[in-house]
Length: 165
Image 1 (cartoon, helix red, strand yellow):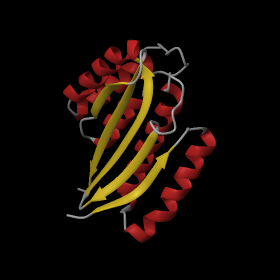
Image 2 (cartoon, one colour):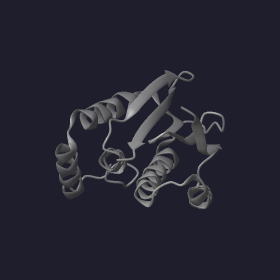
Image 3 (cartoon, rainbow, N blue to C red):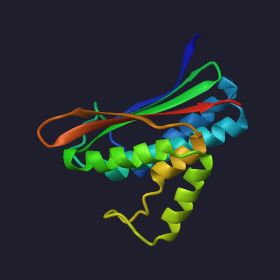
Image 4 (cartoon, helix red, strand yellow):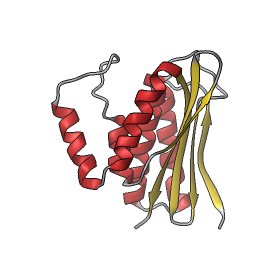
């Protein structure tokens, strides 16, 4: 089955970048025949992924290692992103993703509710909802990988899959 590249971006992520990528994605939707319900899910996952990169890139940004790609293969869409993070934070991220991946749809919703109401905020001021939102919207496990990148950094890559129903 043929894979169609929908979006491919490499470089630093700022709010302006996110706006441009949203615009580019929106412009490509009609010609690709992406259903509105899938477009909305992909858009939300794309935004969460880009915001996670922007907020959680903890090492010196490397334009070659910071990227987002969206592809379509049949009725399957994937959003893959990558950025650098501190090695010391990798285990807690793995644990969080593994927990999310172990939950069913109702469990993810319950975890979202408990997280949003617990009043705990991260060092960066967020409630830690980004990955939960991604898991909730996609309805699929978050695939991830960590690779060493220098003494104190890891390259974190995540892949989210969305299926047309």
